[in-house]
Image (cartoon, rainbow, N blue to C red; front, side, top):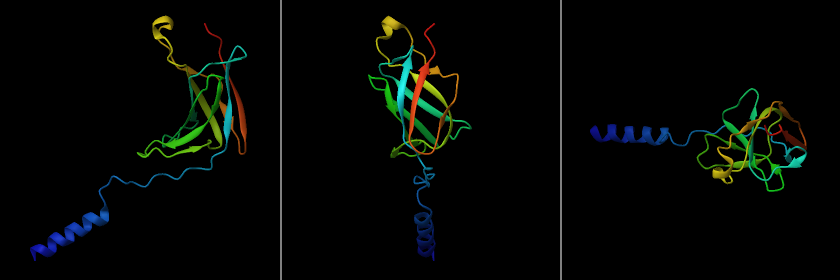
Length: 138
């Protein structure tokens, strides 16, 4: 009898799983988003952009590195995915945008803070080619 109970408990444990492989949310439809980040009409040299949907959807992160020529191409990743599956593009919607400058020489420039854009950006169905204009330096 004791052996049967152990077998049943073990079977229930196997059926339930270890709890580490939770079902991931499905990716929404993603649309290509590329663009350039500028300040004073000139492309910035490096950094990163993060697009936060409004209203927020914490299960996904949409971002990109910014190249030395100021260009970026967005991709989206699940925040709960330990494997880091990343797909190109972004879901349709309105986004708050944050630009993080490259680290560079912090001894010369001091601490570099992220810049929140004052205006939201809209991603539409289909191809999106955006220009992100940063506020002038103070």
